[in-house]
Length: 253
Ligand code: PEP
Image (cartoon, rainbow, N blue to C red):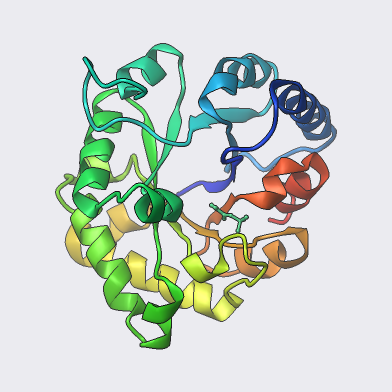
């Protein structure tokens, strides 16, 4: 059965020293709880701290992910980081297609698909973000928007490959705004995504794929969100920067 996952996306926050303190605190907090066997905690720090996070992860109960990856294999691409490099650093996960990258760095579904291919070729699990902007929801286009993102970003994969992917539904109007989707809105969209996966790959495959919710998720609303049958956890931004808040979400299952 699919995993419950809580992944923290630190974005471009924290100094090295602050990151060190947060990892240290998270490790000691995780030691105090017994997580269910089917729950996975992932921390996605900025690239310069990935090695340090991996060292902590070796002695703790979380795994490490990157926040971005190049769509190219290797070569003269100044400033880029390849999936091959992440694999060689023993990183297991990578966020792809976050709405901030789509909005500020003009990432398209085709680029998302190419990055997913790179990650899978190097044995990393992509955490692929999809979600509509406020205007699209107001026009009741959210289901079509997410369908296009899922189809164009992922539906070139075969059944074996798609089971390596984690999908994060992140309504853009809820990210960093304090506005959360209601539990009903989240479940409705997650069920829609699972239906798309079922139609393409069959129920058995679709049931194996974790679909996370992201957007102003915090300890006070995580329980209600995670109680939904198709919400398999969360991708957490702001609340992952404080060990106590992140733990409040990790223990919400
Ligand atoms: C995110 O950016 O992935 C996110 C969910 O951010 P926040 O939790 O801060 O809304």
